[in-house]
Image (cartoon, rainbow, N blue to C red):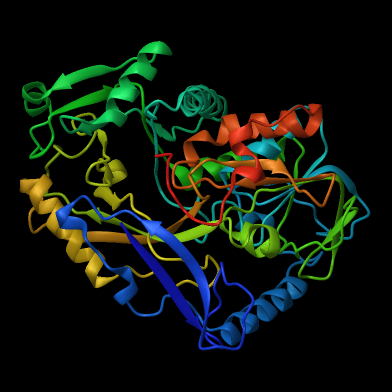
Length: 478
């Protein structure tokens, strides 16, 4: 284990987790315990890479330009909804229309979209705001694909939520006629003494989730694409797979709008004061009024509430790669190739979905990252590490080209548990986030849970409360 400290120059970049500046040489933006990478092929020191953020002055200019663009946009001051979604119902006047919502949801990622969807279905009048659009390229929900799996070691609560979410995703896709779930199966790779995998076996069995326990000879027989190396056995979840993330979130928002939710393409300004929040201001100069507010802002939570969450939400930079497969080779596509996870190597992968290539990434926290200004270009070190790993794990892909890359972010809490709680200073404000790299799959169940808390009250699961969120990262949920 080692302690990594990242310093930003006093007048340099705009950091998400920056603390008050003292006028010294720099500002401490993150102090975190990071595990020594177990995978020899995947040792990447991202801190040696070039600065990944825009300057403070550049970002201020960007925001001012964005605000001006909003006011110059189509009639009503907002961009045309048709450019955002296929057939959305948007609030034509943007903010300041005189309408008061039962609930305003800030953030149209997977958590916010499903929360708005469930709130509307419960009979509430809902406004949904997002500065950049549902599942935009800056959002944690903006990638092409995400894994949905039931295994969580002994963490039964997340297995139950994943089970519920899979049913809700499938029901939604069926009703909306959107085939955005690929039942690839999920293969867990395990070492001889993998306690997490053994906990997964017990939990899946207890909750009657279908699975197979595969020994090494069976793995080699069924999945000859892999060089299993340090793998001793595995668990196969036949009903799990991959969600087409960006399009799935946009589909949820589109259905919510058809059902009566208003979408407002607005940048919500951090609220001030205490007690009852009557309205929030927007960057365009408008206001949005509601009886209750749900801030599901993902990696922006620390920016909206810097004093409360600036040191409790840790956005980290994560690189994703797509490896080109040989021409005509279907060994790396479903149904032959599953989605797979190997915690010992801190690596996961998805098969060649929609002919994009084999997706692969390190499931290890990168450096601090600003979702607004961070440069989303992969590093040479990251490319080299993935090439080494692919050559070792998939011999047929040795030397295969990297055909696509992506830089996204994890929005981490101190231990990986979600944040779902009331704001301590506002009686009618909820904080929802902390997806921590595993949250996307849970969107439907989480949205259902949050909607019930907002409309019906009731205690929040203790591990989701703000009180459990610390200032030092020690990941416990995978």
